[in-house]
Length: 216
Image (cartoon, rainbow, N blue to C red):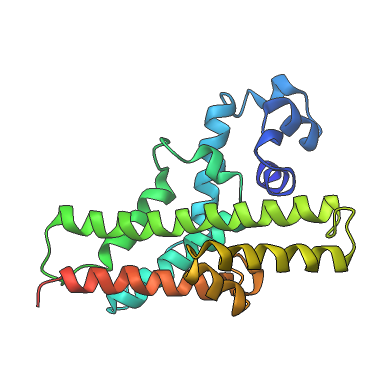
């Protein structure tokens, strides 16, 4: 689908009827014979993604199924970042409803109310979406840093000296012993290589919390 490829490549701002018509090599008015407008186009795009990334049938292991759903949502949002700009408040399409049905089916047999099942699914999806928002914030910061140059006009020696001075100020204040340990142990909370690990840790915590609230 031309609209999906364009949005994935250039972002949400690229989605408009005129641009899509240009990509297809047709007149803008010709496109309106097939799509009522941008809003319908967005609905079709979102549902097309749901079709491509369908939820698997329940395996009988609710925890594993929910984990796979969360991972699928994270991967989808990172692959199609424009979704975050448009999915809130939009009703699901046919494929979206099918994925919700399959997701809820993962919780069958747990002896819980329908409302509780929906809250569990919402919690897992909210965690996945929130994690992606944080990852995109990190990616944006990395891109800005790369664009400005890693040293931003300072030598490596100057940067190292600045870090040592900052570290010394933590000791002098006496207010940040835990933050100082983070620095001394070389822990980067936004390290790109730990994103998967951080996501999985948080997901395990969410699933552990859900398990505690289930009937014995």
